[in-house]
Amino acid sequence: MTDGKDLEAEIHPLKSENRKVPENTGAPAGKEPRGTPAPQTRLSHCRTAAFFLSLFACLLVVFVVSFIIPCPDRPVLQGVWRIDYNAAVAYDFLAAEDVNKDKIQDILFLYKNTNSSRGNSSFSCADEGFSCPCTFVAAVSGASGSVLWERPVAQDRAFVECGILQPRGSAAPSACVVLGRPGSLVAVDTLTGKTLWSQPSSFGGNASVLSPLLRVPDLDADGAPDLLVLIQEENQVNGSIYSGGTGQQVSPPDSLGVDGTSGSILHVTRAGAHYVLIPCGTALCSRSVKGLYEKVSRRDSPLKSDPLWEDMLSAASHRLVVHSSGAIRYLMNVPGKAGDDLLLVSTEAYMLLDGQDLTPRWTFGTTQVLRKPVLGYYKPDTPAVLVENGTGPDRQVLLLDLGSGAVLWSQALPGLPGDPPSASLPTADHRSAFFFWGVHEPTDSNQTEPGAAGRRLYMLHPTLPGVLLELDNVSVPIVAFQGWSTWPRVAPRATRPSGTGSPACGTGARPRQAGRAHGEEAAAVTRPGTSVHH
Ligand SMILES: *[C@@H]1O[C@H](CO)[C@@H](O)[C@H](O)[C@H]1NC(C)=O
Ligand SMILES: *[C@@H]1O[C@H](CO)[C@@H](O)[C@H](O)[C@H]1NC(C)=O
Ligand SMILES: *[C@@H]1O[C@H](CO)[C@@H](O)[C@H](O)[C@H]1NC(C)=O
Ligand SMILES: *[C@@H]1O[C@H](CO)[C@@H](O)[C@H](O)[C@H]1NC(C)=O
Ligand SMILES: *[C@@H]1O[C@H](CO)[C@@H](O)[C@H](O)[C@H]1NC(C)=O
Ligand SMILES: *[C@@H]1O[C@H](CO)[C@@H](O)[C@H](O)[C@H]1NC(C)=O
Ligand SMILES: *[C@@H]1O[C@H](CO)[C@@H](O)[C@H](O)[C@H]1NC(C)=O
Image (spheres, rainbow, N blue to C red):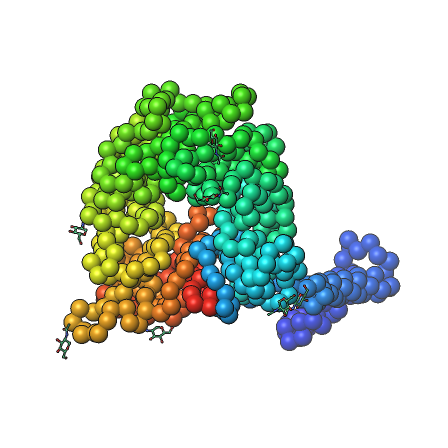
């Protein structure tokens, strides 16, 4: 009998419980009054009800999540986009910032046109007191190329610098500082294009602003870093400090006592003292920010000065003696073992100077240096520098180890006049992808004119140093080119995602696209008619 019951239970497993109920009720432990079959059945009904209730609840949640609560808008990421501006003038300015907060860096650029491109801007040239045509700043979505905001900033060219007022890691609104109109300094909110503050400045019509604007520590205690603006007028460089929070002048212009060129940097010595360094001929002109501020404002500041540097700086000429061969063109702060070191690029050589005592670590003599070098990582976490020797048909692209100056990689790559600068982008393996423009012509082919097909963008990734990947070719002049890591506020560096790269030279194999795993973007503004490629 039991055997038969078990068998039946196996055949009808769901029935078995009901069958077993009467058996169990016979057990001595049964507390329920005999003869009422209800409690167990009710219990099982309850269980069933609970089961269906929870199932219903689950389905409801699924339903709510999938249909009623809208999904967050995912940006529709277009790998490549292009906007054309007819009859517009392009300027060499590009900046990236996440303007619409879609986690993709958006692009800011300048153009000059009669009206705003879309004919839909809230401002026209006349609204800002300019005559047509005037220069606009535009922010376009990095994901799709749609215009986020535009506003007129200047009659002709403007000096714009973005992201400089935001202290590292702060939530302060990010701003672009615009020197567009003679005698005024304007901060524009990067997210909306609205004016944050506007202040008169003391630069006259004939003065030229030496790029870049330098960010100095907060001197007026308003929580925002301040701005040091260097102006050149009649062979003399004056520096004045403006509040980053309000734009008010913190310290009026004072002569630095030197004649210099663009390309100044702010260097922090090991003692924590801030010095402005300006290339001036074959020497390096310098002035402590503390000295500059305290002399004119006649106030004390929390800034430090470095006794060693004060000794090295000749009081009369404000010059630091560096044994540079050729005029200094570029200066860069580069990461060193103990604080920043200085990479000095002269017309004839690259030189790494110790950041404290300015003794040369290494010198790499090439014969013709015209381009600003680019920092990156050739070996994991080991800084390297991408340099160029020459331009034109004899150009060589080299990667140097920053620690020793040794050549890590080199390639002859003919260039064209007006090639955009090189770039590098960090990749997930702690190295960098390097990007440079040039015209690689197979030597055996007998082509009429090199570069007839336009200049091309190449990529090198150190995992496959024998392969140069051709990413793009552009036949119109390129006015501005820059690259960024898509992740906001990662080192502002290099280039574009392109799924259409074809092996250009080398083995023909494609390196894995390490750069894309990390997210990368590039934008180029080209002439004529001004179009923005991304
Ligand atoms: C530019 O603005 C002027 C004045 O507002 C208007 O008449 C003209 O149609 C505009 N042009 C374009 C191309 O939008
Ligand atoms: C013009 O702007 C309005 C609102 O700012 C927007 O709804 C409209 O789509 C825009 N039109 C064009 C052609 O961009
Ligand atoms: C600019 O320089 C020119 C020539 O040196 C001079 O004629 C002119 O007055 C100057 N303008 C201003 C605003 O100083
Ligand atoms: C530069 O500074 C000197 C001396 O501090 C001053 O006389 C001169 O007017 C300043 N020039 C400008 C353009 O501010
Ligand atoms: C740089 O180029 C010049 C001329 O093309 C050449 O003589 C020189 O050896 C090159 N320097 C290096 C370091 O390759
Ligand atoms: C190119 O090829 C033609 C014939 O094929 C030859 O006459 C000419 O010399 C070549 N030019 C070069 C630069 O090799
Ligand atoms: C240049 O790029 C276009 C597409 O962008 C491609 O069709 C063409 O083959 C390229 N030219 C060369 C010489 O690679």
